[in-house]
Image (cartoon, rainbow, N blue to C red; front, side, top):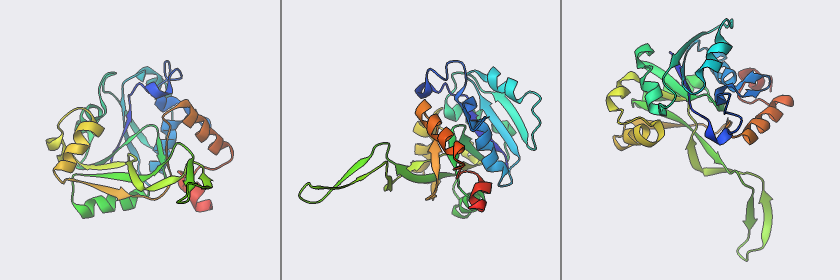
Length: 236
């Protein structure tokens, strides 16, 4: 089963660091984050990747040129201005009947075998990995009188679930692909047609949207706290 990784966006929320370097190549723990993403799959038995490139694609081409890996990587230029849905669609000629798509900046400890099993059992065209929302702010806890009883630092809000990427698709989904933006056009349309499911994973997820996120992930690596790595979870 092939894995499509969206690595062509401009990463505007991480400016100015992405002016010369695509966000997929921003380092954490001495490696570009896209390598960490691929290793999530490799550690669980996946070996075939399609990287959908665009903005500053030459940086990624240069990185992988001559790099010896134990897995297969195909680099596809899908255009600097192409949106997320278009990037996947432009790779469809390389994909089998079932494939996984994800983002180059999201790390998660989702068990991929269980995700794929759930997708096949539900019989939809797509299954999105969903994790609880973590607040970007600390929250205030009060009693009925307004007295503060506690402060919670960036709590997990389990009444709200988000799209964490790691999406399983059947290739037939391209017959129901009404637009160029995955998040705004395609996934909502699949929901309206009752063709998409959510695999709820109450585990670790963090995306590197900003330089602050990069620093937080870097700090986690420095202390050996990398819950997205299978080897780390087994050691624990």
